[in-house]
Each structure stands twice: as C-alpha cells, then as structure tokens.
Image (cartoon, rainbow, N blue to C red; front, side):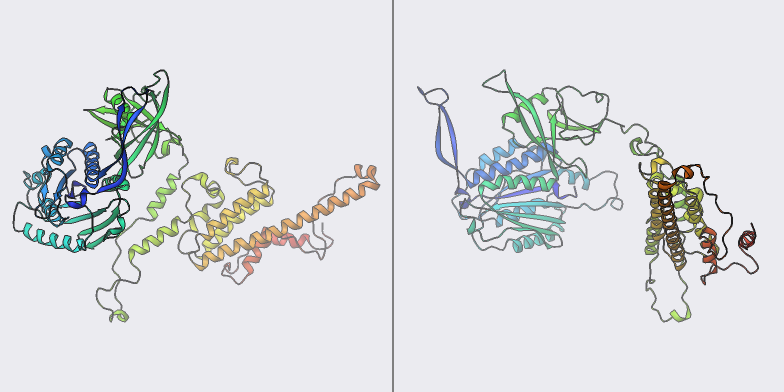
Length: 640
C-alpha cells in the first residue's frame, strides 16, 4: 500500500489533437472474392488508425498485463481530459477494476471531441484521485485492534501517465507541483482524503509520423523536481508508442520475460507435419538474480527424478501477444489441465526446473527444486555447500572469531594537554574504523579451506610462524621463533627431501626444486601480508637473506657436480678399464688447512646472531658450543 505500484492513473487527452491519423498504413483482409481463385484475398489499402485508437489499445494492454499478474493488488484508473471538465472512466472499487468494465467505458466516452486540447483538468482530477483511499487503504485506516500509537502512518504514493500532443507552450512541471501542493493542503482538513507522499509523473507527447518535431517538449529522463515528485518526458510516434507502454509496465512493476522455445505445433494446412514455435510470457521477478530467460519445451510429462520434489516459488504469467496462434495453443493446452515442463537451453545447473500449470483459470510458473528441498535439514558446514567442499578450516575459524570479538570501546581519558579540545569532538580514529582495519589485517591472508594453501599442511614446522606472525607486535624471542620455523624447512630441503605435504596439493610433474619454490613463495606472501611493525619487516628480511644464501649454495653445488661429471667423462675416454675398477671417492671428514668452511644452517645462524640486529643472546650463553669446539679441533693440521 505504501508502494508506487499500488496506484496508477492514465490521463488521456480526449480532444481535437487525438483525432489526427497516425500516418501508418494498415491492411484489412476482406476474405475470398466470389469467383476468384482459392487463396486469393482482397485487402482494403491505405487505412490508418487515429492517435486515439493507438492510445486506447496500448493503455488497455498495460491494464491487461497488470490485472493478469497482480489481480486487484495493483489498481489502475483512466481519465479522459476535456477543456471544461475531465471524466473518470472508473474508480478504485474492485467491480470497476476489470477489462470488460473499462472497455465499455471507453466505448461510452466515444471518439475525441473537436475542441482544442487541454490536459490541465485531467491532471487536477488525477491528483485528487490519488488522494482517494483504495479499499486496501480504507481497511488499513479503519483496522480493528490497532492503536494509533502502534500503527505506523499510512504512506500514500502513486503514478500518473499523461498522454497528449504538446503543441502549445505549457509548463507542465510547474502546474503539477502547484496542483499537488493545493491538493495536499486540502487533504489535511478532511478525513476522506489522504495527502500524497510521493508522485511519479510521466508525460508522453504523441504525434503522427513526421510531425514529432512540432512537440514543444523534449525527451528527458526521470528527474526529481521536488523532494516528493519525479518528472519524465518522452516524445513518441505511433509505431513506437505500444512498445514504450510495455517498457513502462515492465519498469514500473519490475517484470521479466520468459520465452518458451521449441513448442511443437501442427500446421493448419498439413496436419501431419509440425513446426516449433516460441511464446514470450511476462511475469514478476522471482528473485534478485532472476532476469529474462529462454527456456526449452521439455514435454508435458514429468522429467525423471522431479515428480516428488517441492515447488520453491511460483508466480502468475501472462503472454506478451494475446491473439497470436502459438500463444492461443499454449494457453489452451495449459488451461485444459496439462502441465508443461521447461528446462534451460544452455544447462549450467540442473538444480531448478520450471513448470507451467493452471490454477483457477490462471497460468502460473513454478520453480521446482530438483536437489535438496526446503523441508530437509540444512547441510552441515563440514559437508560444504552441496557436499562438494569438505576441508573448511573450522577450528581455525572458531579461534579466529574468539580472537576478534567486538567489545564496547572505552571512552578515552582527556589529558591536561587536551583540555582545550572542544567537548563532543570525535576521536581521531573511530572505534568502528579500528575494527575494520584489524579485520582487514587478519583476513588479508586467510584461506577458507585447507587445500587453499600449502602452509597449513606444514603446521608441524610452521605452527609458531602461523600463530605468532599475524599478531600486531613481536618481541625478540618471538622473532627468533619465527626465524626457526622457516629454517626448519630449509634443513629438510638441504637433506634433499621433498616438501612434507600431500602430493595432491602440488601440481603433478613438478620437480623438487619447483615444489620448494612454491612453498617458499607462499611463505613470502604470508609474511608480506602481515607487515604490521618493524619487527615483522626484520623477519621478512631474514627470510629473504636466508633464501638468497641458500640459492647461492645450491648453484655452487650444481656447478661443482657438473664439473666433476665432465672430468669423469673426459678421463674415461683414455683409461676406461682402470677407471671402471677404481673405488668411489671417499667423503672427507675434515677440512684442509686454510680452506673456508662450507656455509650451512649453523653458519647462517651464527651470522645472524653476530649482527647488530637485536638478536643478542644472554651473556655467558653460546649456541651449540660443543659443536663449535669439535669443529675447531677437527680442522687443526695433523688431526684426523
């Protein structure tokens, strides 16, 4: 009742201008001429409709679509505007909201009068008609059991569509606003009227073909002319008028179209053959994502696996072309008690199946659920949507919610330096903004599923890193623990082992080096997504330096191995027999004097702790002191 769609009024100029011919020639069939060949038809050429004929047919089509789809929920009135007095062809009562009554009223009003055009009287009467309460509004006003304090005020809205030929200078916008203000002032002083809270006015300037340039108004989109009124202007010719009226109906009442294609129909000339036809239907939007669609005739029988399923939603339908032969055949077929099953032409999902079915002499479109219906228990989150995803990080998400619960923000205490601040000034950063910033930091790298990232399959090695690094601050010991986490992975790589993750999480065919590259790439992305402080940047710097040193060592080892292999191949050319019986080279257990020790994880650790960075061990403690002494002893000459 508080919607613009509840009331729609057509103001039709019923004067001299509407008597003009459209300029569009039509042919009228007279049938077979006596004595002529079979199939020869006579036509009356050069017959034209008047502008009034076009207006009456198209506006009645608007009413037919609306009453077919919404019944008496949405109401329409027609007003014929004369210079002296406007005539209302019907009122808001249910008895006069029908095609038969309105068609008889159009016949009674007759052809347009031979007087100058005028729409002022029609606009004034239309605004007064919008202030008249409809049966729904009357029941709301006089509702039983409702107190004035508990019942909200009735909101009265409506639309006016005015059809005329604007050939004289006339400020329609100013006249509409003036009439609306006077009407609302008068409605406040009586109980029989309701003030208009919102008005949408559409002016259609209709002209014969070739004379549209005579219009004194120009086409302009809908715009606000006051806080409670919108105004739109359209200049038209008769060939475009019917289409424009249908577009207004679709836009005003949020309708979509469904085209049923592939309907088998027998030909009248040859009953043994049949062709496929299409029928387009109007219906209300079935949901926020429902758009115009193309559905294929699947037959009057129920598809397999659909007969016992429930209907998800349903709505009335009405054909776009009522008198066409395919529309008549489809309507008679459905109204006879048969059901028509429809399916999408391009099958993206088999979840829904549409059905055309008759109820009480009206054709309804049903959307059937072919999978889980609304009466069944909803799926568990561990099963995933439709049972497809099963590896949600549910425990991690529970922990995430506990760590980020909202709480009342305490009011900051005003220090002595802030006493000059005015009372009531908002803080520099609002608590709501702080909460959003924290949520953004915590979720910038947060895969929903375990398979969405390799890191959470390495929780045995990266548990401390994944737990400590997303925090806002890091102390010295926490930084050391984060470094040790990815160093443990580097130790596994140094032994020549592949990443300790499932083979399904890595692409098939990748070598070990490529697999490790993927792991380190995700670690780097995780670190860069959580750079909340200089301490976090220090951990990232340590990781990047360690990776750089490790890559250098890998390159040196690969170069030395390739050199040894080349020497073996060159020596085997001259002394193949003796080389084949020589024992494999033994690995040296000690370093030659003066040789630089090979860079390993222990050396990297020592280099990092000896830097000027804050990684300083407590005084008197040494890392792996016994290993250092044994290495120095073995490196002395003469010791084996």
